[in-house]
Structures are given as structure tokens and as C-alpha cells.
Image (cartoon, rainbow, N blue to C red; front, side):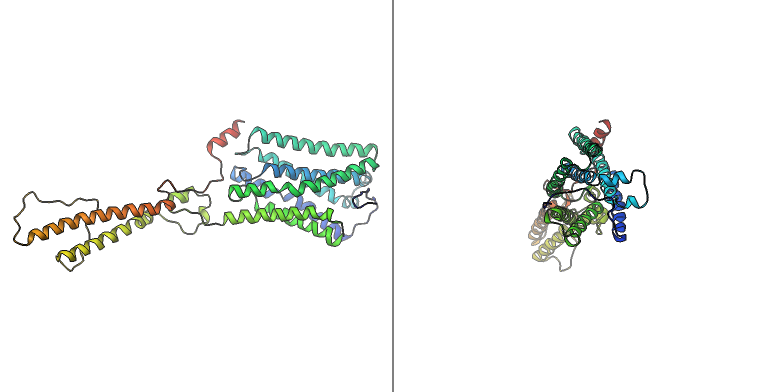
Length: 379
């Protein structure tokens, strides 16, 4: 038997109690692993952040593995046709793989029902992928029914295995790129991705350490596990970055505002903007007062927005008062100019963070717009 040659599994193969327990656990986990992903898409009413290429490739990979199992375990399927109980324990891996294919095909269909991916081309991809999966499993079952465990079927099973290994190596690269470009998880479920990453790692270590399989058996699952952990790392890095948002309006537009502990109000924002202007105005007025020799007391600066009022009747100044009056008028003009300059500098400095200028940027909202939602409903 060659390195990659396959053969049909003997129906009388004994399975230990530990193997049965692990098989039951994996079968149940396969049914519920994709539930968090589906719930997150429905809750956000959006499929933004998910890669259709990765989802389709994962379905193809798992259906190739399932078709391989149908061929090599056909004799067990025949023996279990009229039996129950312990016979099903030898088909736990088939049950697990069937549950994985079914749930991932449902997630792929759900992906095309929510914006911004509810378009014709993605729905065509989901439909073709589902039809391919059903046709491949049906063809394998029909061929095994007519000529079980023939050399041609075993060669086909070997081709299924090699193709599945090749697909899984590159399947998660589009999702990694998508997560990086969208700047976070968006509609991607941490729970589903984490469960799948740990499952692929466990399967790979089982093949490597306990089953002593060649590298062609455990390497694809190891690569898939590493890629999914990389996706989680990139998503977590973007999602935990402090949003560059200052002010109440930016917090309302930010989808992560619920997790931000520091919340500014409009009054605090206005106070932060006007405080430097007031301090600069008071300092300018003190310097002008000292220069004029009017008083050593600190007098509050006049309101910058109000122009100084003068009486219509003016008393002729005594000797020496003319200079003092000129200094006072120049002081008021200088105070107003300083306050105006302070207000312009403060507003310019605050533009990048407060959203008051053209250079401000707000974090993108993963939820769909009303136009996108309306388009999905109509289509």
C-alpha cells in the first residue's frame, strides 16, 4: 500500500470507549459550532466582514472529505442500514462531517441574504456550491451502491483527499485579507472561528501524535488552524484599538461606543474648547493693565464677542489721561485679537479629533445602511 493509497474500512473494526466519547463530542460540536456565526449575522443585520471565497472554499473542502468517507465507509453504511445502536458509533465521523457541511452551507446561504453581500453574483456562488456538494455526495453514494470499494472508487477517494488538502491550505487567506481591509471582525464571529481553529488543531495533533499519520494528513489541518488563529489576532487587534473619537456626536456614530468608558458631553467639549481662549484673554488683559499702570488687581477680561460700548458725551481728559485712554483702547483691541486668534488655533488643533474639520475621520459602522437593507428586501 502506498503512502497515500486508501482502502475501505472493515465493518467489524473495534472502537474504544474513549474514541466513542470523542466522536460524540465532535459530532455535537459540529452541529453547534456555526450557530454563533449565524446569530451574529442576524443580530447585526449585516454580513459585512465575511469573505464569500473563504466560505465557499470551506464548504468545498468539507464536502470533499465527506465524499471520501462515503466511499471508504460504504460497507459500514450497508451493515448499519437495518441495524442501530452500537453500529452508529462507527459512523460518528460521518455524522460529524455531515453536520459540518450542512451548517456551513446554511451560513453561506444566510450570508447572501444580508447587506452588503445580497447581490446576484454571491447568491450564484452559494447556489453553485450547494449544488456541487449535493451532486458530489450523491454521485459517490450511487457509484458505491453499484460497485462498492472498487479500484476506481478508491482512486476517486484518494483524489478527494488530496483536493481537500489543497483547498484548505488556501481557503482562509481571503478571510484574513478581508478582516485586515475592513479593520476588524465586523460580522465575523469570534466564537465560531475560535471553535474551528481549536478543532482543526486538535485533529492535526491527533493525526500527528496518536495516529502517526504522514504529514499530508495532518499538515492541511495545521495550516487551517494557524490561519484561523491569525484571523482572530488581526480582528482582535483592530477591535481593541482606542477609537479616535472626541465629542458626543462621534460617540453616537461609533458602533463600539458602548465599550468606551470615557464619555464626553457637549458641555464638556465646549468647555474644553473655550477654556484656553478665556485663559489667554485674562493673561493679555493682566499684561495690558500692568503696562498702563491702572491697577494691580486682577480684573476679568471682557467677553470677546461683545464690542466695547462708549458714551456719546465724552469729558475732556485732564493732562496725562489721554495717553492712558489710548493705552486702554489699544488693550481692548489687543484682547479681542488675542481671543480671536486663540479661538482659531484651538479649533484648528481640535479638528482632527473632534470632527469639526475636513480632516476628521469617523470609524465605519458595520451595520448596513437603509438603502442596502431596502435593496436586499427588494431582491
